[in-house]
Image (cartoon, rainbow, N blue to C red; front, side, top):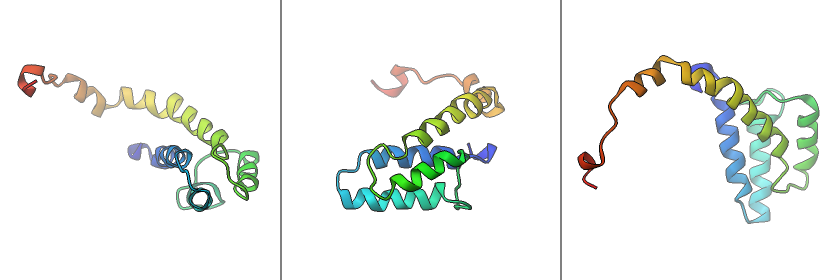
Length: 111
């Protein structure tokens, strides 16, 4: 992701996964604001590429955050990664070289 200058996508997706596991309402609110400030608001340090309507919906939803307030954006980002970044990764020289290496056998691992 970093080679394509879009590591914010995976960071956002992971932040959303962590957010959905949050139990405390106070932590939910603080995490929602952090995700919004880091990834959603205009000119955020790690701003993700989502449409204006989704951004507005999130801005309203974080006033009373629920575990699903970032779901639409998370699905969009996942789709971007799945359809753009992942196929390019599979074709990358890095991945191709990784595939050429001999896998470690179970006997060599000591299992």
